[in-house]
Image 1: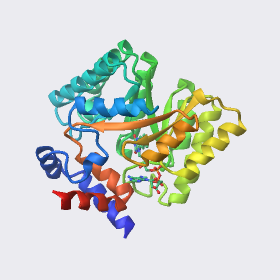
Image 2 (image 1 turned 45 degrees about the horizontal axis):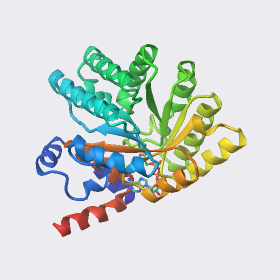
Image 3 (image 1 turned 60 degrees about the vertical axis):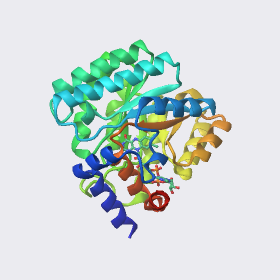
Image 4 (image 1 turned 30 degrees about the horizontal axis):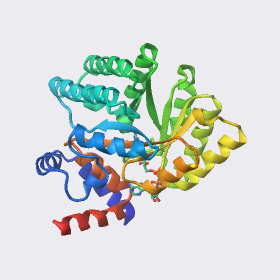
Amino acid sequence: MEELMRDLFLFLSKNRLLTKLAKRYGLRFGASRFVAGETISQAVEVIKDLNRKGLAVTIDYLGEFVDSEAEAFTMADNTIEAIHLIGREELNSQLSLKLTSMGLDISNQVVLKNMRRILNAAKQNNVFVTIDMEDFTRCQKTIDLFKQLKLEYHHVGTVIQAYLYRSEKDIEDLNEYSPNLRLVKGAYKEPVEVAFPEKTDVDENFKKIIKMHLLNGNYTAVATHDDAIIEYTKNLVKEYSIPNDLFEFQMLYGIRPERQLDLVNEGYKTRVYVPYGTDWYGYFMRRLAERPANVTFVLKGILKK
Ligand code: FDA
């Protein structure tokens, strides 16, 4: 049943009509639990609150289905606006983005042009940029573009998904770039030809790549809400005397907020991924797919209206 629900939400996350309707009718139905608001000023208030609690942030201006060069250009403009605001307001925040929203599906030329604009603004404002990893069909392209940009800019990183068979090899290949990587389990529906179908295998591979990347001496963001993986990381850094400034934990806004604060109080650098923008629908559906029990929150939200 859980698997069916997961598939359903991942299917719904790709629906253009529902995305349009969601944009029109605003941040309702419980999505505000996971999304910081529709405007940058709402997001800034959320970031300030998290910073006050000792949590670092990475902000994401949400955007799905970007098909034209003009749309990608506007996405990049909005992202640059967020970067300048981080600098001006001296927020403890990095930035995350998806290459599809910068024109990945249009052409390499478009995506590179937008990424260079963004990375120049980020450099000016001392903001680190993480390129999120999307579905498998875009994985190689994303890694190739990341490599190209990493040769030009220091303050850029990307994401490796533990559910992919290729992830171990990617960690090995990327080592020569000394990359700052976020490691995650993986959020998309992938076929068995490319991804471990069993959760236990994903978890074991997650541990394996965390260990590889940390022991390679590279900065590692362990992005998970899973206590077993968090404990594994804590024990690993203790065992190998890995300093606290070589790794951090990351979690999503609205998911296990009390655990986020526990980690801060234990002295671990912890970063919250804060999405905002009108295009919140696909992101919200992927969060429901990870944990169909969250539907209860949605239903409560609807009943309250
Ligand atoms: P798992 O799914 O096993 O969950 C462990 C426990 O955490 C659950 O039992 C539950 O208690 C809690 N939990 C997990 N998800 C929850 C939810 N939605 N609601 C409520 N509780 C929940 N993926 C990707 O493919 N590309 C990317 O670029 C990123 N980027 C990214 C950034 C950050 C900061 C995070 C934390 C995650 C991502 N992800 C991602 C998503 C990631 O791949 C994965 O889908 C989710 O983190 C869920 O997996 P967990 O590791 O939390 O474990």
